[in-house]
Length: 514
Ligand SMILES: Cc1cc2nc3c(=O)[nH]c(=O)nc-3n(C[C@H](O)[C@H](O)[C@H](O)COP(=O)(O)OP(=O)(O)OC[C@H]3O[C@@H](n4cnc5c(N)ncnc54)[C@H](O)[C@@H]3O)c2cc1C
Ligand SMILES: *[C@@H]1O[C@H](CO)[C@@H](O)[C@H](O)[C@H]1NC(C)=O
Ligand SMILES: *[C@@H]1O[C@H](CO)[C@@H](O)[C@H](O)[C@H]1NC(C)=O
Ligand SMILES: *[C@@H]1O[C@H](CO)[C@@H](O)[C@H](O)[C@H]1NC(C)=O
Ligand SMILES: *[C@@H]1O[C@H](CO)[C@@H](O)[C@H](O)[C@H]1NC(C)=O
Ligand SMILES: *[C@@H]1O[C@H](CO)[C@@H](O)[C@H](O)[C@H]1NC(C)=O
Ligand SMILES: *[C@@H]1O[C@H](CO)[C@@H](O)[C@H](O)[C@H]1NC(C)=O
Ligand SMILES: *[C@@H]1O[C@H](CO)[C@@H](O)[C@H](O)[C@H]1NC(C)=O
Ligand SMILES: *[C@@H]1O[C@H](CO)[C@@H](O)[C@H](O)[C@H]1NC(C)=O
Ligand SMILES: *[C@@H]1O[C@H](CO)[C@@H](O)[C@H](O)[C@H]1NC(C)=O
Image 1 (tube, helix red, strand yellow):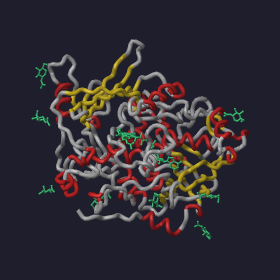
Image 2 (cartoon, helix red, strand yellow):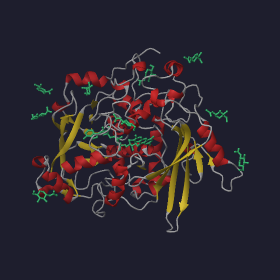
Image 3 (cartoon, helix red, strand yellow):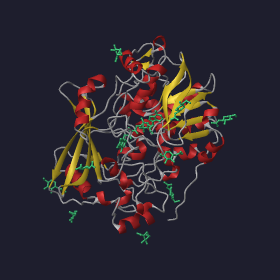
Image 4 (tube, protein in one colour):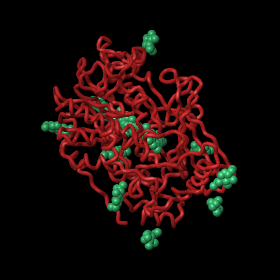
């Protein structure tokens, strides 16, 4: 395959005029799972959109260059090849700059956000994800149907990423499926394709489903960002960290930025007077951080910022907006169980960077086929159970399985994620978080949500941080659109939910500005 670097229009556009010298109708902070789809949809309106990303380019499509030597003459980077995913969990490569240095659980700080480094598992939202997570009525499942359809139209999914239509290293998967669906079991699981059946998550089993395309990572960077950057009214600014929103009372005027790396901007970027909006899509932790620095949050938290080196730049206390940012933070607790003694295929993934099997490399480079087109360790099926507890709460547990090698032995690993029905969150999570940090990678599912809780109305719900229009309470033109506005953990790996939420938010914001 001939290397072909698609030179994005934005790189040439950025040469002519600096974003510092213009005003913008929409400034979106954070080019991740939510920010990229949002930027694309808002830019369809013809209004000017600036997407500011703290990190550097990840995928080769956007100028990324980080790769093992065997990808040298290709348009691919470590972020584009599904099988290179696991290096994020190892210290076999230098991963600095990929994982946010200021967040204590793994979060991505490169272009694409989580979608650049995650396992690519992509599940469409289920009705439960909206109706049982304390979302306001305007975000219940009957209002999310068209947003879901729009997300699906941009991100087709597959359970067989390899382009030859084959699955590799399937023993673990096959064994798990045959054990759980065995009809002589009193309650055998039903095998479904999860994205074809979003209505059921009780005692069902599915192959893992991914947004991978053409044997490459795909996702929002390969779809939404491509269409956005063809528009002259859209600009992507990399290597630039937003420190705070600049505001006069309840009106945002722009953002203050600093360079994360060379080529990043330093200064203030302004909104179009009166009609412009700032939208924070920096992820649950970084959006909260930006809000705190913008004097929006719980009083005790704002006092901490006031006492820090950011203090001198902070608004006077009489302009503080007290809202419980962070209080509703949530994730699914996760526990692992490993079973050995099966005839499992094993693969020497750890050698993939330096000494990959030549035949597999050829198969991948020529045909995007073979084990390198899959995420690894080879992910087995996922399955769900709804359990009604003695306390009459319904709990939804999602099990994920994969096969790997431990001490030279093939093992099947089962992770149980308590996605729905757990009872502690927010500040009540403190002990849990300390334990999670101490025992990484145990306990956290990395499916954080809810730090900027969405309410139906700010006036009536003191615990809301944003209203149903995604607007920050107390602000006229500042929004949050990311995992933080989804009020509870979803039934499956959540990026499909966040992308759908971004679709819905784009429609709401465009309607406000009609
Ligand atoms: C290792 C890992 C594996 C995962 N696997 C899966 C999976 O297989 N399937 C799934 O559904 N989910 C998975 N997840 C979770 C999923 O990726 C996240 O939930 C999702 O990306 C969150 O979306 P978001 O838009 O809220 O934030 P993100 O996608 O994290 O995007 C936030 C963006 O904002 C940028 N940013 C941060 N601060 C600033 C700032 N101050 N200024 C400018 N830009 C800023 C960041 O660099 C980032 O690009 C995984 C997560 C991790 C960490
Ligand atoms: C902004 O515009 C002014 C005048 O139009 C120009 O002199 C200056 O170099 C520009 N600054 C940047 C950063 O592009
Ligand atoms: C690499 O090039 C191939 C062939 O032109 C193309 O299909 C693919 O989308 C490109 N991938 C990236 C990440 O640029
Ligand atoms: C890398 O990880 C291994 C195993 O987890 C550990 O033994 C080793 O000390 C680590 N190396 C460095 C340089 O951190
Ligand atoms: C199903 O379970 C029964 C009883 O344990 C066992 O005899 C049979 O071999 C199993 N079938 C499969 C396909 O695993
Ligand atoms: C962004 O920073 C990275 C890392 O320092 C650098 O390699 C890259 O060239 C920079 N990109 C731009 C567009 O300036
Ligand atoms: C950013 O600009 C400010 C004000 O002009 C300056 O003091 C600071 O040193 C600059 N920072 C960087 C990293 O260039
Ligand atoms: C802030 O600093 C003052 C003075 O040093 C101290 O009294 C106060 O406790 C600090 N507050 C917080 C929240 O750290
Ligand atoms: C995978 O399963 C098949 C069929 O049971 C078996 O023949 C094969 O040996 C297994 N592979 C390994 C590596 O154990
Ligand atoms: C790629 O696929 C073609 C057609 O199936 C096949 O003939 C060829 O051998 C494959 N190339 C590699 C390197 O696997």
